[in-house]
Image (cartoon, rainbow, N blue to C red):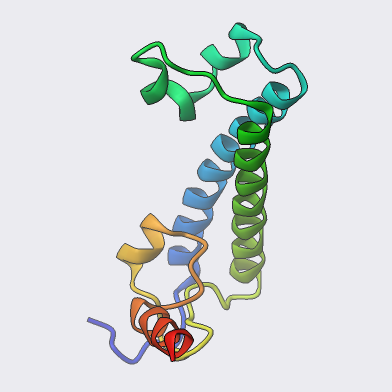
Length: 132
């Protein structure tokens, strides 16, 4: 185990770049679909292509309002921005370094949340401070 590592290697950064790029392709497709739903609310052919909605569609009860689709689109847009910012951190070789503790964020966390900028420890610490 490399406890004293201060950053991820170029090879490790490339692995994360691949994960982030895959997520970006899916996120942008979902964002585009949501924007189409907002612009053409009620069009069934768009809903059929939306992977995000498949679990809801299974029971045949999908009825997204323009407002709901707009909120989901805004959330998706923010997610895309966060992923793009993570790519910039890869370029700067600062990716995976906690912005509070300066420690490396574990690979397992980054694989699940590739745009993370905090270790779980730092996130919990900030949450406690916020409650005081």
